Image (tube, rainbow, N blue to C red; front, side, top):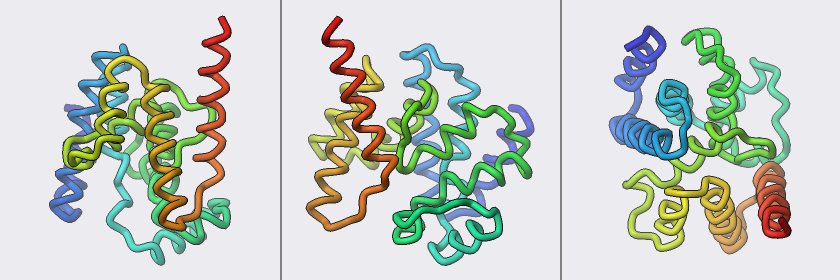
Length: 196
């Protein structure tokens, strides 16, 4: 176990038990998917362990951190500050946990809303966070995402985003521009692949 992993595991002892358990389930799922999709296991492990570093922090405090970091939050981030827990963790992971891998940091940043141009690692962490066993909870749309993740991370992401967008619209939740842009990018890629 390297120093970064030790520090991230130690950080889990300082968060609510349910959150720590979620992070460990996501880590297990990320490692399983990394083996299936040929993604670096160490990168997947560090990204999974760090993805919810700031998840237990209140929205008000996240907005304070946002201001401290001079992070350019958009209107949706400010309406739903919980969406900031991924992007704001990046600077802390870099400075306090010595995580320097841009792909790992990108995975942490993008795991809440997704974003266009995600790498395989970033998609894997996004999906692992959504399909860990406790979150799946017998919901057929999420079970479908898990099934798709076995062979196609893009299809899994698209299925999850479509499920989430429909749920958000039904619940009158704001949709982050990155979520919509990522869905559109995945649809364009699927159409292009179908045309070949």
